Length: 307
Image (cartoon, rainbow, N blue to C red):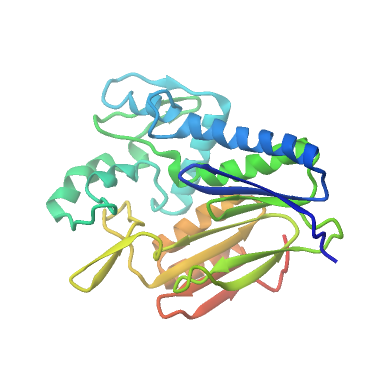
């Protein structure tokens, strides 16, 4: 039997709704755990938000075109090393310098940019242009930026679970706007049931995954988009072309030991497209659920019912 006594702590951070859910603890203990978990998520939001002038992101971006370099702390260095590895393994598709494309694409006020507008920012994109020699970084060209937003939320989910366990939590999960990291199974050791949204009916689950540990992250073309002359343009942008990806994949969810890995894998799979993205996930050996534009579901290695 599942423990019916769940304690939920909802909060908003990193641009979306978040939740810590705990099982098998009392209210006073849960309050202590919740404060520590939310505090860790907010710490990372402050450190890496592109909207704050005092963030590490802002400090790095302030070096652009100045010839100056910034020495970063070990946590930031680890995140930058991870970004470099992901860029290399994705053949340039995962690129934390590509955030400058939002200067031409605005999905809150949808307008189709011209190729000339896109071409004005494309020279500012490319991790290979960044001067990175751990622990020092500089951006050589004026207008260049790095943006941790593509993976810091998943990193925060992993950190939140680590903090929860340090505080004594053993059962439950952390959900940061749909990226879920599991603290541990129900107190009776039965797995948690994690639902994957149906892209066409987001209030419903298209699949339910039993998980005892690990993490699951999802990415989809249905979340933010606009239509122009009968074509849909989604918010996921290809750093190599400057244009949105095709809409042949509606969503992809990946299970991994770390939410950071799961999140990066979903992003790269979306960028690679249905055929190449599926092959890439198969080669990695990560369990996944992929929903194509027609609503067909493909799964890989899901016979493993847990991490």
